[in-house]
Length: 316
Image (tube, rainbow, N blue to C red; front, top):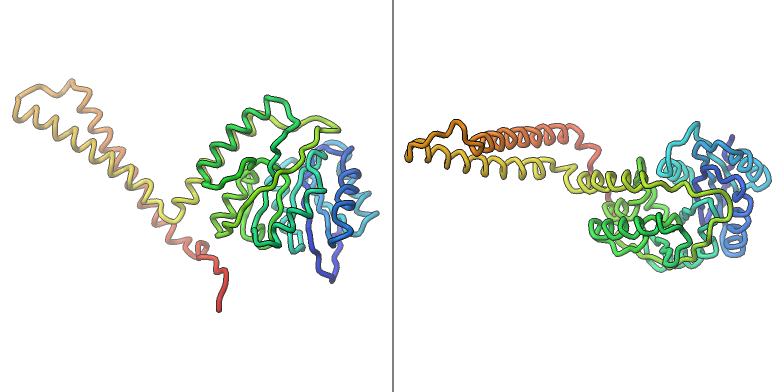
């Protein structure tokens, strides 16, 4: 499908990941039109993430009928992060808005979120304070958001909310994969976009279909949180992580072995069957291995330094 282009500037790009939501797409596009058309020029990108229903046919119908509605179809299911990234790369708006395709997010919230961006914020995240989801989804979500809030140092109550608004440069400077759509505020903060806030938004009950949520998503999300935290803190200084642990193990192992040597040489005690001896040796071996890993990481990092140049925000 050929993407439509326009020479006139676009105020808002709305990116909507779609996975088996055939019944909601026409209604959602109408809600977006009702919310935005009076004030803003806008475009919609429906990104079909390998749907097995007729979602792509519905997207093509909407695109043929409306010149500002575009579609991107994946060959199979890549995940929400990949869908958002494809939409980000295609968008041309001054502001970018993301929302889910299941009609639980309310497009009527968008104008106020855009005004908050105009007032100086880089990113506005929705907060579904009152949720219409089963307890099997809400309880894990509260725990997930609490942990993420503490790790990220960003005071948001709902990292998972699909309804978010960004200045265009924010989405240009981040790259999503895996389950990283949950951590867009963390990625934005890493790139220097620290003016992040939230807005309480209305959360509607699901009208069509069934939730795609599963507990495995939270497990994958936590693993990505560990990865993202490690990469953000130690990508350019792997020796600081591996070296610190390695030196600590060497010191503990060395101290244990000095004590064992003292008991053998000074006190004349047998040491061959003492577990403490093997622990000391093991810690020293692990310490050397971790130091070597850190050194190798530094050598690899130096070869890729071109891709880690600081992003310059402004020059005068």
